[in-house]
Image (cartoon, rainbow, N blue to C red; front, side, top):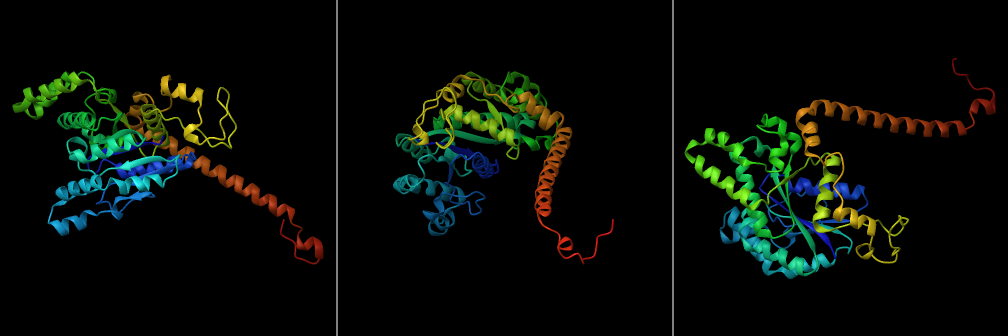
Length: 358
C-alpha cells in the first residue's frame, strides 16, 4: 500500500521547493521517496524526477498546436492525462514498492478547486491502493492583510471540499513573513482560524463598501469549521520534520526502517517482509493516538523563532553551525595527524638531513 502526497497551491507558493526539500529530508533519513511532476509547464525541475508528465505532453506544444492560452492549455493537458491514465499507472508500477510518492501539481488553482480532471485522477489512484493526503501550500505573507487572509481561507476551504482527501493547509515561507510587516494578531489566531469577527474593523477600514459581504464570508468559513493551518520553513529541518509527522498521521503512514536494523522493543519480528507489510505496534499507536511533539509543534515556538526573536535565533544558529564546522575540522586534523605520526622521518633514517628550527 503506497503512501504519498498531492502537493497543490497557487503559483509561487513553493510547491516545487517543498518537494525538493522533502526529497533532501527523506534522503537524509534513508526513507525512499519518488517525485512525480504533473506540471507540463515546469521546465526547470529542481528535484530528481521519477516521473515527468513532460514525456507525455507539454504545455508549449499544446498552445502552439491548438492556439490556446496558458490556462486553457493547462486544462487540456490535465484532461489529456486523465484520458491517458494508463501511462501514469504503468510508470507508477515501475517505482519501488516502498517509495513514498509526491505528486507535484500545477499552480492553476482551478485544478484543485473546481476542474474535475485532477479529482478523477486522484480517485483512480486511491482505487489502485494509494493512501494520499492533500498538502495545500499558501504563501504566509497573506496573513499580514485581512482581506487576503479571508481569500486564502475561502480558497483552502474550496480545495478541501473538492479534492476529498485528508487535507493539510500550510502557510509556507513562514521564515520570510517578518519582511511584510507586523501581524495584527498573534500567529495562532491565523493558524487556528480563531474568532474571525475580530477582523471586522480591519476589513471595514480596507473596504467599507463590502463590510457586510466580508463578514458573511467569515461566518461561512466558521460554520464549516474545517480550515486550519500548519507552518513551514523549507530550510528549517525541525519545521520539515514537524510537517512530515502531521502528514504521516493524516495518512496513517508509519515509516519502518530496513530489515537490517535491529528490532526495537514491542514490535513484531517480520524482517523477511517488505517495509509496507512490517507492522510496528509501538510506532503505529504513537502516530495514531499520541500528540505531535517537537521544537516546531507549538505555534508559539514558531512565532518566537520567525517573528518575535528571529535575529537572535539566526545568530544562535550561525554560532551552532560554526561550532559544528570547527568540530569537523578538528576531527579531520586529528585524523591527519595520526597518519603523520605513523610515518618514520627521513632524517631519523639517514642521519644527514637538515633539522627543523626549534
